[in-house]
Image 1: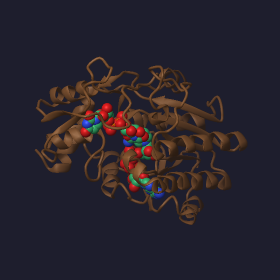
Image 2: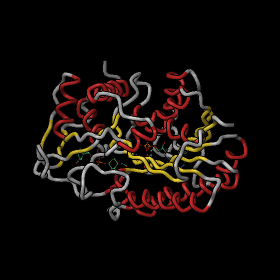
Image 3: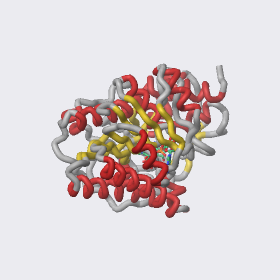
Length: 341
Ligand code: NAD
Ligand code: WQD
């Protein structure tokens, strides 16, 4: 079916928001997820927003026979492959967990696409592939730096696999989307990020601090060579990011791709510092956070943000949501999760 999409990891943070946008655009979605970092509540949330409950198969993408049954039973032209582990620090401590899950799941998907003649794939890549770039903002041509974590390495390796497979196999078209820092939640607060344990990422740490779950937000470093001394990132609203997947799929279905493998940065194109984000969160939500300055976090790059010209021109996509709306949505979601009025 032309407008069928298999969404692996569709119960997760980015996958659930993308599923909503796909359904809104008239796609029929089949989700495969093993709930290793999510739960059924995101499917309920998708249904509350769209009125549609996507077809769901609980399976591990590393289990090729289970995936094969999905390819046998469902007719889709396109795959969006989100299923992966994503904790950078954990990947350093347990590299094989990351290489196995992130690469095996991806290779299974690509092999089954070849076998069942399903042509289109969007792969979730990451700004982490740029590392500490020499020039900013980064374009898709900015050289990748050697990965500094097994997680980052799985993204580089999967990009390379996709490049090689699309070069060798006329039947497969791929788009790698390099996400910058996805933040926020659906404006209806029906779906959002559900980190397990202590969050690694800034915005969930902020919202949990605001909710009183964490005592104090540590700002990792105020002595970087940046305008205010804190790190700079490109924080992209989750719904804007989700929309980029829909246009990527539409591009491939319409045969508008210029090559069988394309890469797009998905960010706002604007740097925001950690201090600016924290202050922005306080102002947007009219509250005060308990904050302290801490040492730099190992592995953090001082600054990275996207040049989004390629996505703007070729996909006709750009980030639209204002940062304060995103930060209000992030807090509304945390309040909902915690039952705070
Ligand atoms: P997430 O953990 O919320 O979602 C991933 C989903 O995949 C989860 O629902 C998890 O249960 C599922 N999953 C993991 N391994 C699986 C497997 N073997 N079989 C089936 N399901 C499996 O993470 P997310 O933030 O939504 O990230 C989605 C993708 O985007 C990942 O590939 C991640 O590496 C990438 N990415 C995320 C970010 C970010 O900051 N969130 C940035 C860049 C790239
Ligand atoms: C952002 C900034 C921290 C927490 C990570 C992955 C990257 C990609 C996106 C998957 C940094 C600072 C954070 C805190 C802080 N994911 N910070 N206090 O590190 O830019 O990117 O997520 O592909 O690969 O590395 O995001 O949200 O962890 O940090 O001061 O409690 O916030 O030092 O400068 P990061 P982040």
